[in-house]
Image: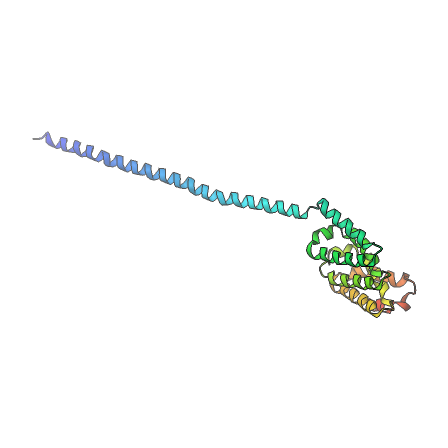
Length: 219
C-alpha cells in the first residue's frame, strides 16, 4: 500500500511535464512571434526612412536641375540680349517684354545672367525711339521690387542712365524716370544710391541746374 503514492507523484510529474513543455512551447512561440513582429516593425519603420531619404534625394536632384543652366537657357539669354540691340524698334519693344517675362517666370536664370542682360537693356532706357524709351522705364519700374537684391550689383550703371531722362522734353518719360528713382529709394539700400546719384549730378552735362529732380532725391 505504501508503494502507491510514489507512483502518483511520478504520474503527477509526468503529467506536469507536458504543461511545462507547453508553456515553453508557447513562450517560444510568443518569442518567435515577437521576433517576427519586431522584424516586421523594424522593417516598417525603416521603410518610411528609406522613402524619405529617396524623396529628399529626388528634391535635391530637382533643385540642382532647376538651378543648373542648360544650353537652351544660355541660348535664350543670348537671343534676348541680341533682340534688345535690334535695329527694329518693334523687336526691341518685344525684347523688353521678353525680359519682363523672364524675370517673372525664370528669375534664377535672369539673376545668374543679370549683368549680361542689363548691359543690353540699359541703352533702351535712353532709346532714341520714345516708345521704346518709355516702355523700358515702365518695365524697370515694374520689376524693381522683384529684383531688389540682384539689382544692387548693377545700380551704379543703371541709375545714371535713368536719371538722364529727368530733363526729357517728353513729360511721360520724365515722370516715369522720377518714378523709377523713387522706387530705387523705396526698395534698395539708399547708401548704394548715394554715390551714383551724386556722380550723375556732378559729372553729367548741364550739372545741377538741369537736374533739379535728381538733387531732390538727395534731400
